[in-house]
Image (cartoon, rainbow, N blue to C red):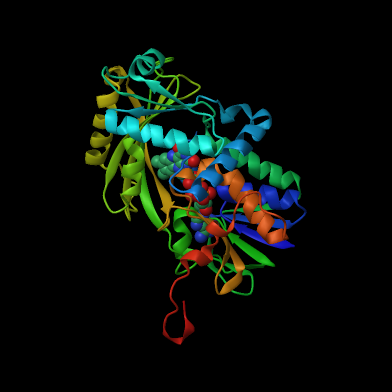
Length: 375
Ligand SMILES: Cc1cc2nc3c(=O)[nH]c(=O)nc-3n(C[C@H](O)[C@H](O)[C@H](O)COP(=O)(O)OP(=O)(O)OC[C@H]3O[C@@H](n4cnc5c(N)ncnc54)[C@H](O)[C@@H]3O)c2cc1C
C-alpha cells in the first residue's frame, strides 16, 4: 500500500514508523522538521487518564507501548518512570482521588492512595496541610522531540522517504496531496497528522487549537521526584470554554523543573500571555512555595489540537475514504502516539486493533452535510 503521511510530529512519525515497518511504501511530508510542532512544546508526561473508558484504554495502551520502547529509545529521550502523584488539597479532592483509584484499579492500573503525612514525606517541597493524593507509579516522563526524530529515522530505515519543507495545501478525495510549490503526490491513502493545523488542510475536521504555556527552570535536583499534578486539573482541563491554569510540575532528568500548565481555546497566537503565565505560576507557587527560589530559563507556548469529546480522530474521514486522520490528541498526544499508530495501522491493513478503535473513528463527529452535499 502506498501511503502519504502529512506532518511529522510525534503522531505522524509514529504512524510512518508503524506503516513502513508493516511493509507500506510511505512518504512523509513535513512543512518544517520532525517533532517541531506541538511535540516540541509539550510536557512529555506519559500518563494514564480516565475521563472516559475509551481514554483510559488508549492512554493505558500508550503507556504500555512507551514502556516497551524505553530500552531502545535514544538517550536524549530521557525516558524515566517517575510516577504521577495526583495531589488532593482537601477532603473533596481526596474523595475524587478515591474514585479515580477505583477506576484505575478496575482497569488493572497499579495505584495507591497516600495520606497527607506520606505525601509530605514523598514530596517535602509541597506546602503543608494538603489532604493526600493518589500515586500512579507506572506513569513516566519523556523528552518528545528526539523521540519524534528517532521514529522518523526508524521509518526511513524501514524504507520510508521524508520530504521536509513540503507544505501541503490540499488533500484530494483521490489520494492526491497538493503542495504550496505546485507539486502533487499520489497515494492509496493520505494520513493527515497535522495536529492543530488539521482543519486548515481538511475542511470541516472538528479540531480547535488550545494554547498552553510552559516554563523551564534552572537546575534544582531532587526538589520534586514525581510528576505532580493537582486533582483539580481534570476539572479545569474539561472546562473547554474557559481559560484555565492548573498546578502541574515535572522533574526533568537534568534536575530542571518543567512547570505548567494553562489552557486557552481558539487562541492561535504563540506569544507569551503575561497575565496567563502569572496565573499559572501563582497556582504552582501555591502548591510549591520553594519554587520561588528557582530561576526561569525559558517560557514558551504550544497549540494542542482539541476535539469536542476529548478523544483523538483516528481513521477515515467520512466522505473521503482515502483521507485518514491521526489528529486531535489535545494534551495527551505524547502518551498516545504509539497507540494511535497501532490503531491506525491495524485499521489500514485490516488487522485486529489492540483496543476498541470505534470510539476513535472520525465518523463519530461527522459534520452535517451542507446543502448540495458539500461537507
Ligand atoms: C503546553 C503543552 C503541554 C503538553 N503536555 C503533554 C503531556 O504532558 N503529555 C502528553 O501526552 N501530551 C502533551 N501535550 C500534547 C502533545 O504535545 C500533542 O498532543 C502532540 O505533540 C501532538 O502531536 P502531533 O504529531 O499530532 O502534532 P504536532 O507535533 O503539532 O505535529 C504536526 C506536524 O505537522 C506539520 N504540519 C502542519 N501543517 C502542515 C502542512 N500543511 N503540510 C505539512 N506539514 C504540516 C507541522 O509542522 C508539525 O510538525 C502537550 C501539549 C502542549 C501544547
